[in-house]
Image 1 (tube, rainbow, N blue to C red):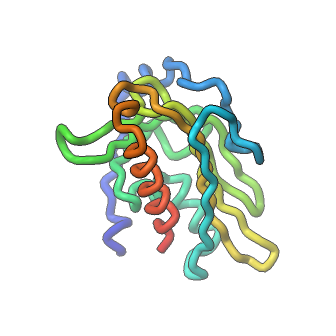
Image 2: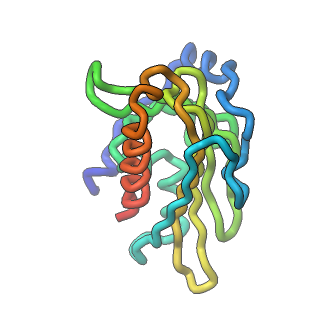
Length: 182
């Protein structure tokens, strides 16, 4: 078994799950990552990569919807469940006191013959406010493309003070997501 697949699943406790499920999303444009035009007033991007032919569309979808892509990107994932509508998740990046926990709620799931993926939105406690989507698409020729789309802006004093560093961290993580399929 590949090392990156040997992951001890950490499940969110019931108290944390209840807190996150009761929380309001920290932005108004829910589902806007599905649009061609992303909302104004945010840092936005849309980046894609073609997957290696060693990944079938079906296996890539399984990995994406089981949070495996996030784990391969180096993030500690504590979800309420696999990806499904209204699932909540804490993503943790960093070590010890230098780590950041970012809570999200899944706002939509795409499950079609040639597309699969999801988007999650930020919850209170996240250093940013906005939405990010992860979408796999299969062309008629069988080529699989992975696209990450996001809009965000600082939501805490720390992220506001960090200024452009926050954007660089987001770019770095997006690159890691796009390379998570090898």
